[in-house]
Amino acid sequence: MVDRLPSFDLSDYTNLLDQLRESGYQFRTIRQMQDQDPKRLAYIRHDVDLHLSLISKMANLEKSLGIRATYFVPLTLHFNPLYPPNHHILKQLYKLGHEVGLHYDLETYPEDFIQAREHLNWEVGILQNLTGQVVRSICMHQPHKGKSDLFCELDTYVHPSDPRYQKDLLYVSDSCRAWRDENLLRCFGPEAPRRLLLTIHPELWLDGSVVDRMEYLDDVLMVHGVRQHSEYFKQNVRQVWLTHPAPMMHNEREYRRTST
Image (tube, rainbow, N blue to C red; front, side, top):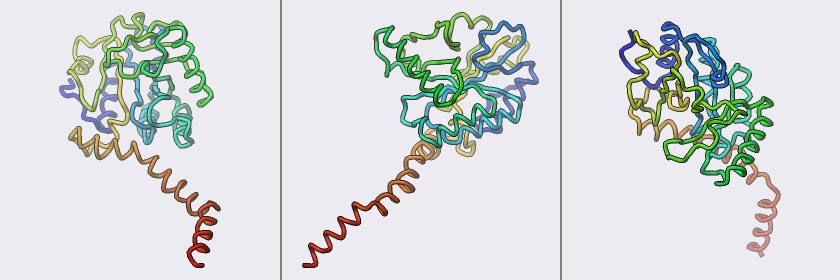
């Protein structure tokens, strides 16, 4: 009997998956929620909200356990999926057997439904072109803000909040590196739910040595979140400034002006 919630650490995440398997759960992607299956199932969903750097650590771990998950990736946040290192990570997710879905943010969408629907298709198209794979699953970013989800009942895509898929389903999510309740423990008791939708934000599990939530935000998440930007300036911008002909000509011109 499991009697405690997992800590936010990759080793505890491994233990959680092992315990779910020992309790009879079989793992599925979000796209497979539409399948009729009488087995005890756990759908593994990852919302990528803060950065793509290092999430392949979790993806590789799942691959080693024979588990396929769904990674929902946004196109409108501060990190750019088209940036080559991030593009490489997305393609790596597919190579590991995982699903990549669109994590759309309705705060960036038109209010009109028809226009919003067109915008959704446009974003899906970008993600498909980026990964070379068909996008079959979508989910909304930050539903806690209370904005009505326009797309949770579309036939075109599988949405984890679609009312058609909620029967016998327990929804559990880590949020801000915290568990809002202990419902996850029900999966290991005598009245375990038949279906579990487990939402895990992979960036929150990368360094179990930092326990304090705000310390983790400052010392882990912010560091990884700005690392690509910092490295870009150090490796690319600095090199351009050192080698571009314009500064050289400027310096030569200034030298001639001040030496006369």
